Structures are given as structure tokens and as C-alpha cells.
Image 1: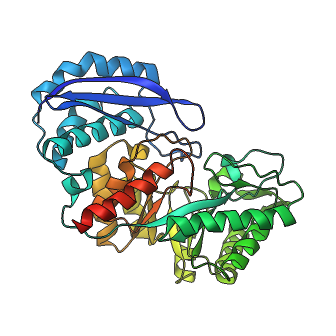
Image 2 (image 1 turned 90 degrees about the horizontal axis):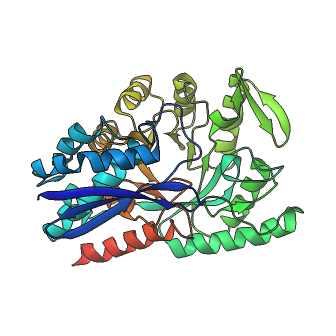
Amino acid sequence: MKIEGVSARTLEDTRGEETIKVFVKTSFGLFEASAPNGKSTGKYEAPSYKKSLSGDIKKLKEISDYFSKLKIEKFDDLEKIEELATEFVGANTMFALESAILKALAFEQEKSVWQLINPKTKKTPQFMGNCIGGGKHSQGKKVPDFQEFLVVCEDPKIMHEIQQAAKKFLEKQDENFEGKKNDENAWQTSLNEKEVLEILKRLKEKFDFNISLDVAASSFYSRKKYKYQNPVLERTQEEQFSYMKSLAEHFEIFSIEDPFEEQDFESFAELHKACHKTIIVGDDLTTTNPKRLQKAIEEKSISGIIVKPNQIGSLIKVKEVCEMADKNHIKKIFSHRSGETSESILADLAVGFQAEYLKCGIAGTGREEKINRILEIKQEMKK
């Protein structure tokens, strides 16, 4: 495949903030892809743009002609794209650029994007959907300190039913509940994490699903203490460990993401050792970065990893992370961001890299596109 030109422009994400859309022109037409924006970002994530969004758009225009010299025939040829462009643009731009190129290549070869990565796979990931929200994704004077209370389920219709059932509980138990949703289309509540977990525990009596948490502990960690606001209290590292362990056991938590701050590999490892039935997941800890994943493997810190392609800005490194995870029996959870677009390629990547789970919300613009794409892929696999 020969690239005839590359360009880009801005568009709004689901939060109304600017992100990037990239266009790749080939002899087969014009192909486009966009990148999401994260709000809860780890300090070790790659910068979204080299200097600015507008700067990246300008740089792509300046180097557009150089892409025509590259021959792209398979997924691994994206390394050529990265060698050319990584010096000039940031992670969001690289993700959108590589995604558009994969779409163009798939079209030319009459395949789906997931087939460029692994044409033989017959597996699609289970869904993880943010049902009730807190932390940085929610607005209000009083919200849960934990960022996400997720349901894990194979059927998106059941996830939607669970969320609607959760609304009825919130209406009864939260006097401040207004029926509003947050950045990720999860219910906003003033209840604390234990009260939310009690609701989900009740819902498990009726529905078949698992409960997962994204604690995002770095967001409320300061001066060696975990500073909770709902209710107001401080926990030491030891107290945070005991609290996480007790929640995992009492509520039979399926997975816990970022239960400690983003540099505490040791506490992750202790919880991993203590909670055999719970997947301990790194996100801010690992930031889809092979070097940080290697450290987590050496320290035996995690049994699951969040994969966010625009967190590292290299689909070649995403492949490396997935291969490392597979080799070390670490579950892969491909994840959306809080500021999403209608882009659906995340679903293809999750299938291609044989992710066990896809964290993509429950409903709403920017979430449903990923869910629907998984359902389409299931049909493609039957042909």
C-alpha cells in the first residue's frame, strides 16, 4: 500500500474538548481515525501532542510527502510510520495516524483491521462497563472517591439493564441523586464506595455479572497518605492495603484497578499475593509501557493490565505489551478514555490482540460504537 498524503484537523470529543482526527489518502480513497482524550492520566503516560494539538496538525502537513516513500503491507510495517513520525508528533496523533493507516490497509486487502493482527482468532473480549462513577470523572461537592464501579458481562443488553436497575436503588438511597451521568456515561452519586458496592451486591442477586473497581488511587494520594473525602479520612499505605483486601473479599470483587498510587509496585504485589481470586490491574502503574510492565512483572505486582493505545502512542509497543502480558499470564483489558469519539477501532485492536476484556462503558456516544463493533466482529467470525 502506498500513502499519497496525510492531513489532520480538530474535532470535539464527548466532553466537548478538542482532539485530533487524521486523514490518510491512498489510491483506494480517504481513510480517517480519531484519538480520545483522557482526564484521569498517569504521570508516566506519553504526551498527547509534541507541543500542542495545532502544532501536531501543522507537522503532519509538513511531513505528508515523506509517507509516500514507505511501503505498508502488514501490521508490523507500522514501525516505518513510527520511525518517520514519532519525532514530530505526540501520542494522540500517532494513534489516530496509525489507526487510519490500518483502516486503509485493511480496505485494500479486503479484511477487517483485527484480521491484520490475528486472522485466526475466534475470541472476542467480555465487556466491562462503568455503571456508577466517582473520582475525576464525576462532578459535584460529594462523589465516591473511587473512580469507577464496573460491571463485567458478556451481554451489553444485560449491562444496560443493570445500570437501569442501579438507578432505582440510587433514587431510593441517595437523597442528592438527580439522575445525571458523568463523563463516561455512569450514574453520578453522592454515596461513598461502600454504599455503591452494597447496591451492586444486591443487583448480583438478580443479574449474572461480576463487580470490578477502578480505584484510581493516585488521584487522592498526597504526602504518603490516601486522602478520602467521602467521608473525610486519611489512610496510610498499610491501612489502604487492609481496606482494599477487605473490600475484595467482602464484595467478591472480580478486579481492582490501581488500588495504590502509581509508583507503589510493592503494595500492588502484596495485594496480588493476598487476593488470589481478584485480578489486580495496573493502569497508572503501567501506562501501556513495556518498560513499566517489565518492572511490574519482575515485582509480581499485577495479574491484569489496562491497554490504552493513545497512552503510549505506538501500536508497535501495544503489540509488545500484549505479547509480554500473554507470556506472563497477565489479563489484557483494552480501555476507552473518558473523552471519547465515535472511533471504533479499539474493538478491532482488542480482538486482534486477543484481549480478555474490553472496557468501553455501557451506553452513549463514544461507547456504543465500540460495543456495536464487537457485535459486528462476532458476526464476521461466523462467516
